[in-house]
Length: 468
Image (tube, rainbow, N blue to C red; front, side, top):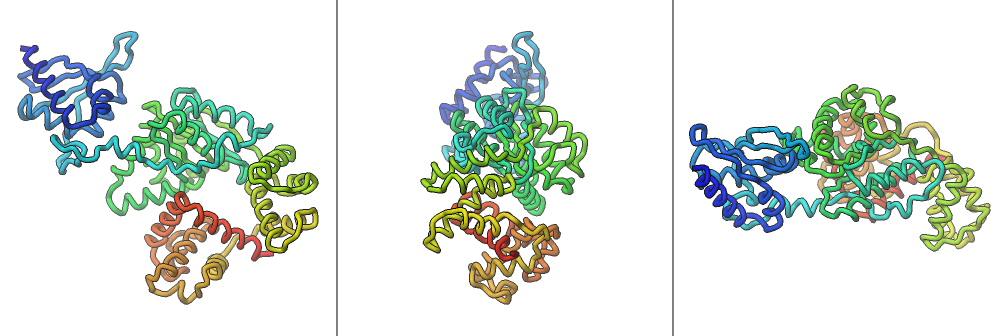
């Protein structure tokens, strides 16, 4: 009788093969081993080679499995998995599969449908990485040698080293974002099939807020649980966001348990992250914590020299030395100073010398510690786009005015400590959800529109110049 049931299972595989690609069939269904079927309990037991295969089948193919089992075995079939947990010692665990969704199945899991499939969209995931931030352009020095070395190891062996999670911290401008981008770029180069994703903590929180408002939190969590290499920047911004942290806790646990690589960046070590529960802090600390220090003068010189060589710039050695000694040990400031030097040189048709460097550094590096106000931000943005404050505050949906509002709200959220509701009141008397949506829109555009990103940097640079 069991042989007859094995024939039925083989028929199931034939149906499945007709409804998925050959690669999908070989990857997810061919490794399944039929064990037995109980007519009394209508239970089918199959063996799968790993927890990962089980979870993937349950997440993406439960509808397809349900339909073919009903067709071959009849109604009310209970699918049970025996998951191999230790091949060497022949250890396994048995779990009952989930009930199929009651909603209409998407195209990729409907029997007989040849439309787009989940794994097709998997390949199209935009990793949101900056291709210019690579290990080749990340200059090594005493202050970053350990994080860079470990980061390269993580990129080459994602999820398979003891450096999981990899937690990087350091002050603003020390190169954290560059390093975590480099890890993602290298991983994607070596393993194109992996789902690699870079996301800022702010964007993650905006996405979560949107999911709560649209009642799609489960979809939000499910998406992040499919990532193979998750890179989250500036996680200190979650310190006072308990619901976001609780959600990330579940995502973190799933990824960690299934051997996915997690990379986190912060401006402070886990022990100094206020407002986060111990259960999350201990997980942040269970891999490797590496500090990125501000670059010393020699590293600053090396960074500037490399930038000049890469961009074809001609800056005298004494000017490079002066910039390296003066620019507060910030890689971001170094690049900003060089860009400003080039701009001044072109506009005023003057050579780059020590006098010009002193002028630029005075305006671009020594920044007033007094926080920006929303009024200063909106004034600068309005001048940049040639829009009046009245037009900014109006109810008009004209594209130019909407863009100015969205940019102003994004920058106000970034440079002030005001809640979204207060920012909305001060910028056109909008509500909290409008501010959240604006920040999400600008954040996403920054990742895909380089000219817009350059424009935003120009506006932010105007803040510094305006306050001299």
